[in-house]
Length: 315
Image (tube, rainbow, N blue to C red; front, side, top):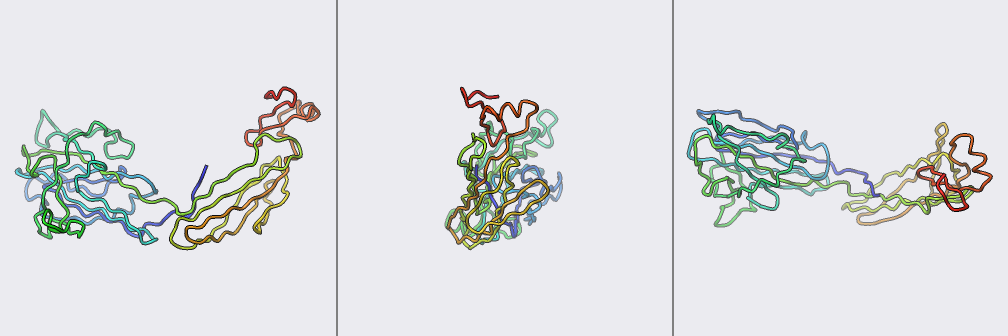
């Protein structure tokens, strides 16, 4: 199985968002901002700029979840731009562009209705929530072109949007069918993980006493720059160090022997380092150990499970 080192660092992460009339926004269940239910002089004409780095605690897939709703009638819509910049100069961007491959939407009642109130399914704003039943179309419409409640981006240059990130709504034309209508939207995005992958392999798992085993670490640097790091590995207690390549060193900590390598790998380059150990002891499993050793049994170096040589039965 591969594992990764050098997670990419996020240097900045900002959500620009404006809703007509109000909203609450989350990333992976982490609250970004909640305007509250303002029914008079709502912030429909205001763009909020929020730092979201605190909500991005891991790499990989995420979900931006927004509840936007009407409080004053006529319009129910939201526009947003999520911009995440990584320390390698790359960026991740998510827009309110109605992209059906990344956006899911559903209505969730009405803030003023006693018979059709807002409903928030448990976990609706978290990554693991199943939104496969959210089939409502995310319509888009042209932004106002007012810097107070619209967001500029050259991606949307042209006659359709005029350089403004589109508004998105549950209703064609971005109007509100009923005053107080409320909607939930989820947009998926991914932040890149570590540029360096390492895969550990073993030459064999079932070994006999005295047999030499080879452990290797294959590494690959997918980053745009050279990286330097160290690989450490603790040898199994039933083995003794035999040798290694690429200038490794060993250190002893109590009963543990640790082997390590300094590694320098160029952009988009790969390499491998290996260590050899001898399986010189059987896993201790009680009074049958001597009988097992005399019978010439083998064992699994990973699980410690023993095998008799005759018939190769698990002991």
